[in-house]
Length: 418
Image 1 (cartoon, rainbow, N blue to C red):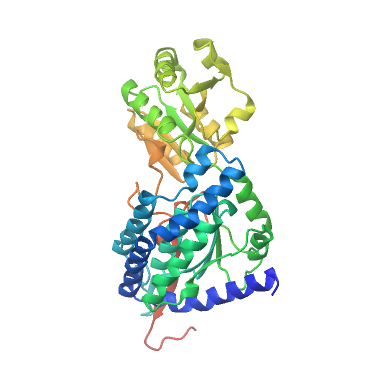
Image 2: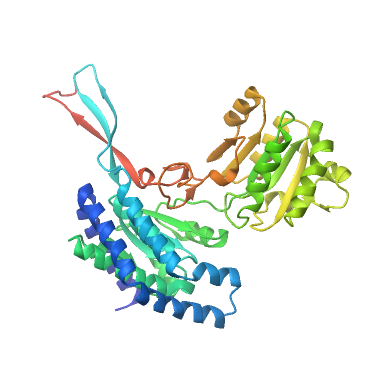
């Protein structure tokens, strides 16, 4: 059988399985998640042995220590994956929820009900734990899922999907509700992206190059974010200690993630006072600053920022800094260079906070808080499958509700349209 025929068959099987998953009740789905968690813990040694194959290949390929760290599946990662499934089981099931009801003058009762999307294709890189997180959330939200992890985690992902299927089988749910592309060939992704007859949504997770490739080649709707160029604006009324604490957290806590601050904007009225203090705090954390001309007139020792710096998602300890004349200039900068991901304002001025919220069109807008909170778990969604900077149909962290759609349910007693 050719690769194309294998993928078409796999996608068709997922579509068939999605019909049963979609109507499975909450208790059955929760039971399955708990059994899968138990299976993962039971098969720890097997999963770790398969992971060793990926780690061996990674070392032969001279992958970075950071990449190898992300690939590693140890006891702690196993426990985290199992606990994540148990947490998903404890979350409220969105499927079947009535979100709104109203009555028409002719007596028709109209409601909106949450329903599964169907079959979701998820294409991602590096971390094997994404395999379990994504499959668990799709199962809880009544969806079938087709997973294509990075080739660097091939053996780990195959082992995890096999274990997930065993848990599904024990719960008497269709094992084809979770599928993995069993090929390292990149052509497999291209073929998968053409299966619009069987797949309802594609979610890519990874670097900008991967996401752009998916968008350019998919016949299926794609939920995406290309990158996270996140900004923090320090307003002229900001409290210094609050600003320092938030900016350090946004940049330093985990600089290699999409909701880390990449550009700091500061009002000119406080730049002379605040910038030297902030620079000193950043230096202690080994953050390299790159500034505009106004910023460098205050901090002449830092590197000049180029046009490319304003667009950059560094994902490391580099920070672009711009001194602005007012809040409107800060907002204009965000609109031009931002990626609709996460932006924050630090201010003690209520009207400025409201103005910033209204004008900034990103998936997460924060007042006196770190951009690092734009995360499903941190925002109380329980878990997330990614962050969307597209506005159709989800915007921001995608939890269980965002993995469902809404249908209209209309109940009458004989009404006809005239």
